[in-house]
View 1 (cartoon, helix red, strand yellow):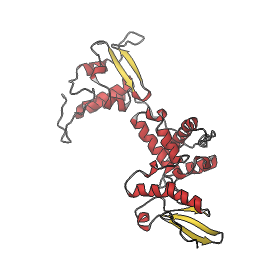
View 2 (view 1 turned 180 degrees about the vertical axis):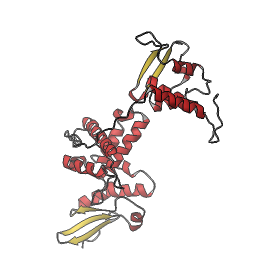
View 3 (view 1 turned 90 degrees about the vertical axis):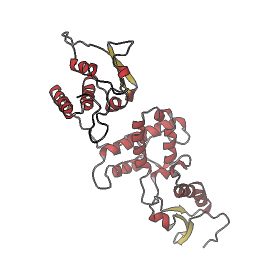
View 4 (view 1 turned 30 degrees about the vertical axis):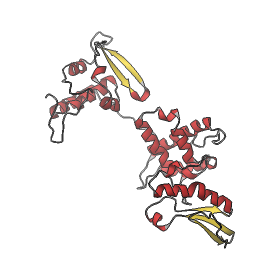
Length: 312
């Protein structure tokens, strides 16, 4: 057995096998019991390379985990973790809405945190070792959840986001990230289900039920989504009274679509091709509402005891 030299990395072990002396990094038993993801990693027969791997990546990552830091931030250039970090620092990522970024983070995390048979995370691999065959295998694994249920939609998102991240970082770091994108061309099994659009009769039945229940805001939100095609996030967090009949344009409503950063200015009233007014119940409802805050849709009840702050 080789005598340990000065500067021997912590948690580095040497073992003799039929192929000669081999090196391994092994997490301490207490960390294994607490769920540390990298329990062991074979480091080959070259001591210099094994030492560099321990000093530059494995031990700093373990120390960050032990002290409560973010181990994933300690990623060597060229690793999958590094690629995701580079992408998250690009304008392609930072300009996305917070809700979209959150979904993208989970999608990248599902790939980076996948544990291989040798105990390593995919995030530790060098991007040049990731090929189409490997991606196909990861996709097949991600399609099935821990409980055995299909996860086709989330697996599709992971592949889509990884493909985007690869393209973005290749453009900025072509010497590190290859031009051939292994996440492109994956045979996807997922087919989106199309929701049936509600009819006008169903909408009005829902609105009447919400009003009767004392939740006028829910009925108003449904009308905004149905008539003006406002997304849920924009209805509940952005659509303000200042957008409806503003002082400088009292015969218009400004509808924002934050996801694609677009807006539409709708004249009031808006007439159909036959000259009849479109959705008069919408404007009549808004014109008759008591404004309880800056947003059009506010909570009807202050507490679960259903103390209503709205009329009716």
